[in-house]
Length: 237
Figure 1 (cartoon, rainbow, N blue to C red):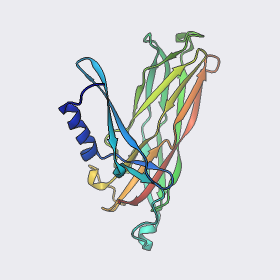
Figure 2 (figure 1 turned 90 degrees about the vertical axis):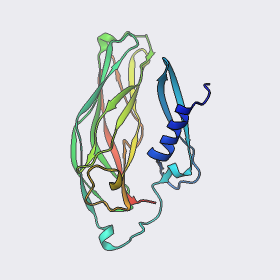
Figure 3 (figure 1 turned 45 degrees about the vertical axis):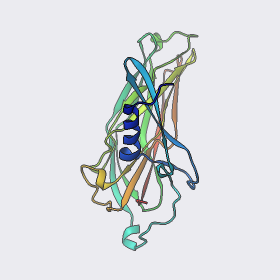
Figure 4 (figure 1 turned 180 degrees about the horizontal axis):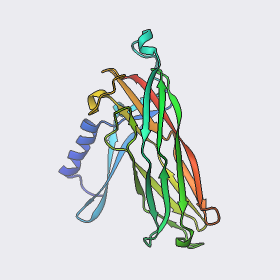
């Protein structure tokens, strides 16, 4: 446990007052605990900084009807979702490549009604292992790797969208897990505004909707799964 210094205090202030991340839960918000973890290096030592968040960081999918219930506001709106193909290599502790994780290219139209969560199929996540680089019966935990991609809604994109991929080998099966990412798109924070998004509205995007795990074995070296995403068009509260 390290003593709190000015750099860490400044980073906590930046996260809580500038970035202002939020977490959306299914059902009523109630009282939930949220914290942001930041891993960085200081003088050659890895430091894990825990940033506790308050109630302002918690939202719920079920927050009642939109503030504006006019027919125009509640009419379906169409957006174009796109994401280029991306991939990341998984390495064993000895440095050898043992798997490739790939997120498929997708380009599809989505139709949203304000206040109604919409779940869509957004393509395929696949794994392909390299059996000749794996030693049967020798388990290991691989270092987390970053899968970088840039999903877009019309002409707008999140500043960053980096999945952390966690992988482990139990001696005969390699499993990689990709955890959900979520972002609130608001025109005030976008370099290119969404024409169909009002100044007091946001578009929440969560992909995948739940942790997604893929497993491949020495005998069956590839596997894939569909990626589901949830989109919510709603008022900023």
